[in-house]
Image 1: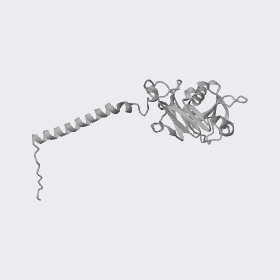
Image 2 (image 1 turned 120 degrees about the vertical axis):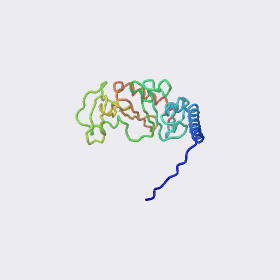
Image 3 (image 1 turned 45 degrees about the vertical axis):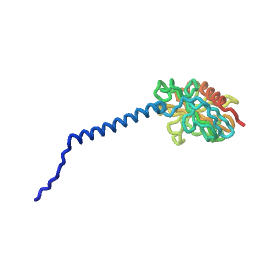
Image 4 (image 1 turned 60 degrees about the horizontal axis):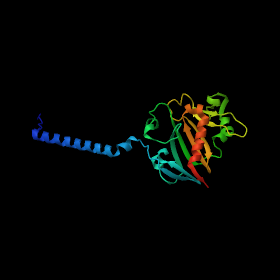
Length: 241
């Protein structure tokens, strides 16, 4: 059997030093690049998609013209003037303010408690808003008479075959000539780790639907919440021809 030999070339000290200097130079260049990038773009990256810009965006949805500060608009692609099908907002409760550095922890879900509301303006998607759908649509899908909830609200569970998995229906007492407050919420167990576990929609402006999501913990303040939402909508819809 003939042994196979392999020639191993020795690496000189000069070559080792050259390679070491090459890698050190590459590392230094990469570090410098990261430093420069951080200097120019670090602030923008730290905002995590938020903006401090409070300049007004004029957004047209149907016959409605909305004047919305940029720092209230949730997505960067929607922070522009012009015609849109929908605009998504987020607001800090109870001030009803957009993003600012002093509220950064709450906007990044790192603060104490749940303090964000999520709003969406778009053209009407149904004949009736949530209050109008309470009797004809939602009630037939619930089981039992319900039980007392926070601040005079009644809590009704959806049937297992309703399609509303882990959700409950909450409604205020009905008074003659006045629509009840109605919201759908994830139940207590499912809502623990959810920032905005409840949802309600109302009609505003000219054929405009406003859907807002909020923490289940705010149900105890539902009257103040609903009034603040309506006042916000009226204050930012500047024309409806």
